[in-house]
Amino acid sequence: MFIPAVALALLLRVPPALAVPDSTHCMAAAQFLREQQHMITAIDPDTIDDWRSRTRVVSCRITAAGGTDIGVQGEAVRLYERLRAAKWVRTPDPRDSPNEGSLRFRWNASDCLFNVNREALLGTEAEGRVNEALVLKPGDTRYQVFVMCLPVLPAAPRSPVAPHVT
View 1 (spheres, one colour):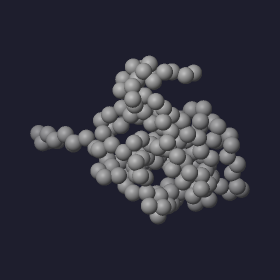
View 2 (spheres, helix red, strand yellow; view 1 turned 135 degrees about the horizontal axis):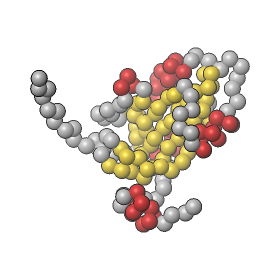
View 3 (cartoon, helix red, strand yellow; view 1 turned 180 degrees about the vertical axis):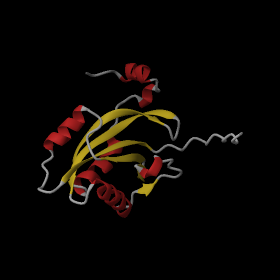
View 4 (cartoon, helix red, strand yellow; view 1 turned 60 degrees about the vertical axis):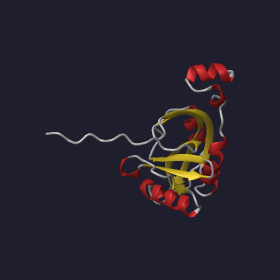
């Protein structure tokens, strides 16, 4: 269903200029996942409530499925090492998730948050499509990568932390 940009802007509470679905920020990450990780990928438009910049941004997401012969944890490490080797850089002040289960990397004008999972967790149509299309090699274990990409935005200033009172 097509929703005009102005109506979409009202629905999403973002300025009309930002309401046009844009998947360009996902292109490099999806290409990386296909070529370097040999994954099946799907790109969809999205609206991201970006906690880092404290803004709502119309952008895109990537749902990917792949197979690994070194285990999901090892594959996550390998993915992040390959991103760095391909010259993706950590964003300034990334504020990633605990234990680095998700890492934010920058490529040109795009910031992408990469999440590696053992199993399908989203229940989306895209997740179903990539999992159905994936053919595992004997001995491989399926794993998922979910990526949210948006235009490069400056991080919002951090709030001062109140001292702990006992």
